Amino acid sequence: MTAEDREMLNRIMEFADKVMPDIDPEKVKVSEQIDKLRPILQELAMEKSMPVEDVFIKYMDLATENALEYEKKMQDDFGDIMNTV
Image 1 (cartoon, one colour):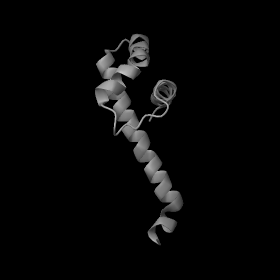
Image 2 (cartoon, one colour):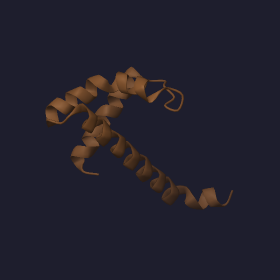
Image 3 (tube, helix red, strand yellow):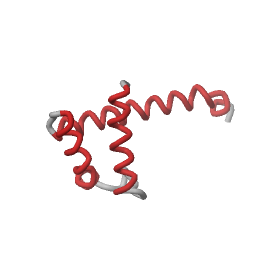
Image 4 (cartoon, one colour):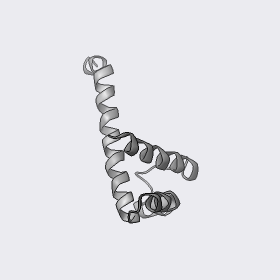
């Protein structure tokens, strides 16, 4: 993930924390989540001269990549502990 990608992801995640602080993504419809994120997605789209849909797709890709990186780090850091249980 590039520094620019990381900045984009962080901006969206910070915005999401403000507008949806206690949301359970598995229980709230994706369409509702998108509606809440629309302002930051539109702002990024204008800054990057991209369609809003492309910004959302990029965000989803980056969020997935971030989750995989986190999972790998946890496995690397705590894998021995987790495997002995």
